[in-house]
Length: 289
Ligand code: ADP
Ligand code: ZN
Image (cartoon, rainbow, N blue to C red; front, top):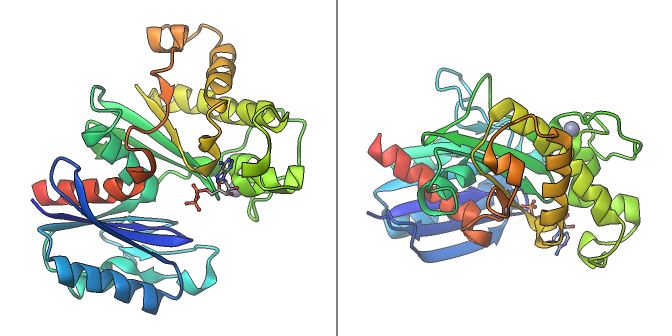
């Protein structure tokens, strides 16, 4: 089976081809410029490779309601030239086979469930901590949708002493306080240049740990995978696990929470390919449907 994935990001787009086991063969990447230019590059990739199915894992917000007139669109994005862009319709112009369309993080959660570090469990929460913060949740191979799709990065965190958030909508939501740009504003340097023992990371672990504790109470995920640029700071993992364990305080009586070993909250098994393979996984699901 030839699956084409399109990982549609606010900074760059990645197109790739994988088989039904998540083995990537072709891959290209180009910067996100205008919709006209960028979507044409995606169309050319599809025309060249003639896949059996296509998956689009997109930055958002996106419209996932099949009954909506804007189904398949990127909607109220702060990237103004991408407002109400019909990304699915544009790919449909050149491809009449099965197309899966979902958020980048729902795609990544599905990819990890099929081919990555969540194959042995029925539910997986995937969080990216990068330019923004987003979360996707898969249970029994179904991506969680509702009114629209979850916007986990915009949850409010309780009782914090910091208030220098960068979210234009909520100021001090999780993304506002703990994304890469938030770290850069707070500490006045690139997040990647903060030393691994910088006090920034203890605070970052607290913010992430608090949010994950809430998400565990709401979703009860069997595994949590943390990706995105900020999580390249791998010293965060043990610190986050400790915060989560302390916050939940023994109430959730499951060994994953009580022991909190390195398998419950961990890095994506598909590494930096989680996004692209997530898109391919959406194509795989559409093909089976
Ligand atoms: P995006 O979210 O745009 O898809 P990334 O997941 O790569 O892209 O996230 C980019 C953000 O991650 C930037 O804000 C940057 O500050 C931060 N970042 C990238 N690499 C590192 C690193 N090694 N350590 C800490 N932060 C990083
Ligand atoms: Zn917000």
